[in-house]
Image 1 (spheres, one colour):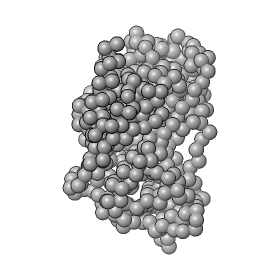
Image 2 (cartoon, one colour):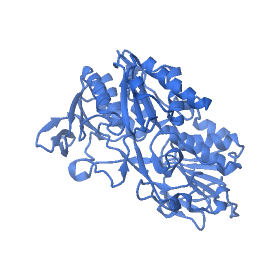
Image 3 (cartoon, helix red, strand yellow):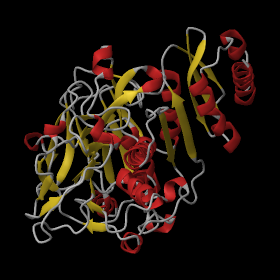
Length: 486
């Protein structure tokens, strides 16, 4: 299994670094907030739009593009360089609706191009053309010259930029070749091509093994249930989603998955993946010498920030990724980094973090572009947010949708019987720090970020006596109102 880094791994997916004040307050060149001007010969470079260049074609790129359009600075000025064959899309769909069987109405492009995930316009390839945005597809950037302000791509293109936004996201952590990490039938999922390959295997498989008990593992397992496959999840921890769930909450979800026929092998290490006579993966060999048969294996053991070839702009060696300030400026004037790849100051908790989540990808991209194009100078103030939605296909006896806001530190209070609602509150030094809610309604989900951001003082004993999730949320809401009146 993948080894943990030496950095502090927070339970809910944040990797945290608490630097000295000098690290957080170092001043970057003031010129880096504004875009840079340049003069070039028209025939020297492959891109026509050179004032602003975004490297990366994921969520962050799509939301950044929309923000450029809103400021009237996209037409003839913005170029997006992507390794993918598609315009930016809402990546969370790949492990949710995209994996549904054909008879369960799966999600497909162009249905989930950005920015539909937040209720915005669907930005199809035609949208980018209409807005005058130059798109370069299937041509990842392989080199950068910060002095000349140029990029080179894998096909040999030379691109010019005035201001550069790095939005390269993450790559999936992989098993090494020597233990079968690239055998036919072994899958990783980060993009549409990965998802299409996985679906091709799901159509033929009978036994699927999923390695990893986090978001990817839980969501792919839920999809495999819809295909009516023999499904097993293997992971080294003692519970599901250990970074966020309490042991009690994890047990509730595990029992639900078992009702759907999913099998669990917890606390298990993997020695290697074994191939059959046809060369395809046929089994997973565990550390204790036992084997688990598999027609296909899905590896979901985390991801790594895609920093190459941008190491020169400055990395954070503790949380990983490219170090930026509260306006997403790197140490090189005119170069910014957003989304999963950015190590940024998490203002409300006074630490530096790197967040792998669609909500941060959207918000960081928008904040960065607004800072770049306007007089906005306030620091990004992000509230950590995570969610999952599974078993949402047609005919499912029960749909699962939970949301978490805040910080999972301190003592916990769990209310509810998971029928379907359950809530867990994190309380530290008498203050409500975080909350997770399963199967809430719109009004209840809307309350969660208010609670997490305001961190009201709360009576733990009173909360513990709540007879229902609804009553517990009313107690928390009353505590919030005291803070708001003060």
